[in-house]
Image (cartoon, one colour):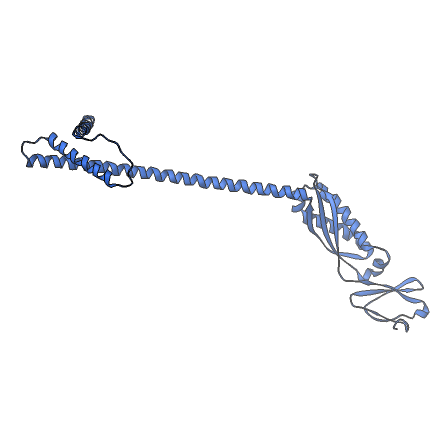
Length: 286
């Protein structure tokens, strides 16, 4: 209805292109405008000034022959002062931007290996933005920002990278586990050595106490019973200890079967063996 009376409305963040008999005449800002169609004026179209986004997926190859898919996000907008160029010079803005993105990415990524591609994605984005800004400014468009939002290697390459990372972590874990086991073995050996040392001290003190007790018993018995010799007292003490040992073996329910000779002759043989051992020890100490 408004166009029938020669009035048009241009929305906010939008400009309209006015033509006079098919020739560009003016750019209409947001608001209401008079457009007398009977005099040859007409509205050729409108152009949005809002920031638009275009996502471009580009497949290329790195320096180490790994195929990757680079996803670039291009944010651009038309300039109001160059609205005529933006409206008339390009028939397909997105296709033009996509072509420049392909050209820059396929010229930059093949110079880098895969790891460097991930590390220098900001440099790739800057190169794309500079090239687009220089090319698209002639067509009335401004490149607001360029982002490399994703770099996707081939699925097999990703799997291999994950396996390498997993193997490295397993190797580190194995080293740490081996080091921990080494420390445990060292501490266990130190504990056993200390235990054996203390056990040896205890056995030595026990034997010393036994010898001291036997000596005191022999001296006391010889003093209280006239006519007895040290040998008689020692034999009696050994017999007493022999029977005490036999009693302990029989009273213990967990003891294994022990076969030993029994009788007075056996006691005499044991006493002789112990006496001989004591005499040899005394000769060594002297």
